[in-house]
Every structure is written in structure tokens, then in C-alpha cells.
Length: 65
Image: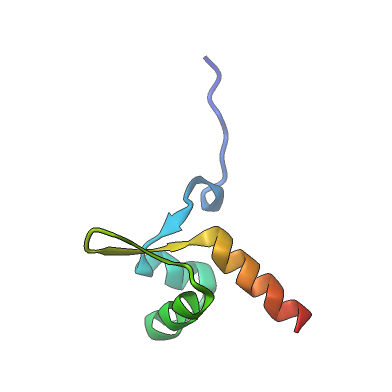
């Protein structure tokens, strides 16, 4: 079988807060605040994860504003 090559960022749909900070190049407080305002926060049990597709859409909307 062939091995699929996938970029690191494309392999994850949901990010934890540590990965979110790295992805957005922000501190934890501002990154989480932005993600919540964009509606990207998803709760699975006690974990808070952030949807990268919703974040990308919110960032694209910033460019248009």
C-alpha cells in the first residue's frame, strides 16, 4: 500500500490550546478569546478543542473587513 503524505497542519482538524497558540502565533488568552468569538470552540467531555476550518474562515473574514 502507498503511504499518504499529509502536511502537519492539514492532518489535524481540531487543535488543543497549545497547538492553537502556535497556529495563531498568539498567547493562550488572546488565541482562546479569538477562537471563542469565532465559534470555533468545541467541547468533547472536559476537553476544549478548536476547529481549524472555522478559525481559517474567521481569519479570511478579517481580511475582507
